[in-house]
Amino acid sequence: ALSPTDTSTPSLCIRPSPLPPPPAPPESPPPFGIWAPRLLFRAEVGAGGALLPGVAPTIGLTGGVLTRFVRLELTGRYRLPRDAAPGVRMSMFSAVGRACPVVPLTESLELPVCFGLEAGRAATEVGASGESQVDLVANAQAGLQLLYALNRWVALFAHGDVGVALARY
Image 1 (tube, rainbow, N blue to C red):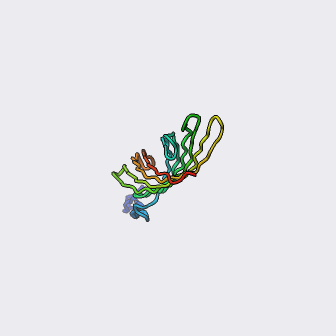
Image 2: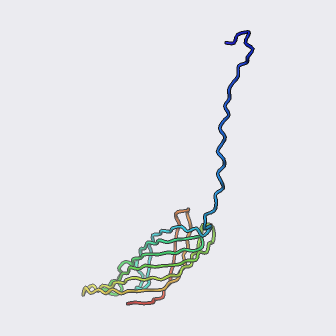
Image 3: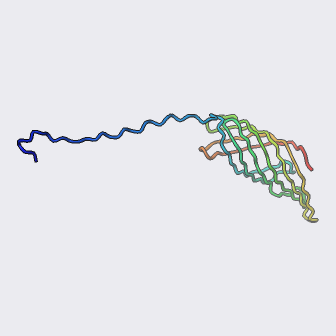
């Protein structure tokens, strides 16, 4: 309580608020700019006929490095056994190396134009006699891919290749 002889006035102590943190420096672009490499992983299911007579169901797994304008890919493929002739079944394991310049069509749509080499092992089994033969095979190929990016991590993908046999041993 204040006495009638006290001439002081009550005061309210207000503490100043702390200063806000300084603004973050602007983000600098990546050191490679649009050439900044990213990793690529892709699972493939389709039909393939390179180096085998006819078309066979094919599964594959691709890994690679990509930038906005270039892709480097390495694919492992397996063409499931199929009847090449009555009593003759063929299958094939192969590896494909590709370099693909990329034509960006829109922000989400790309058209890679690919060139590469495929090498592998084709197995032939004759059912009645139980004989089998393994051939080493190689081809050069060119093709187009079409990719539509659904988001940063997932894209729809379609591709087609044509190949020219280089060797069969």
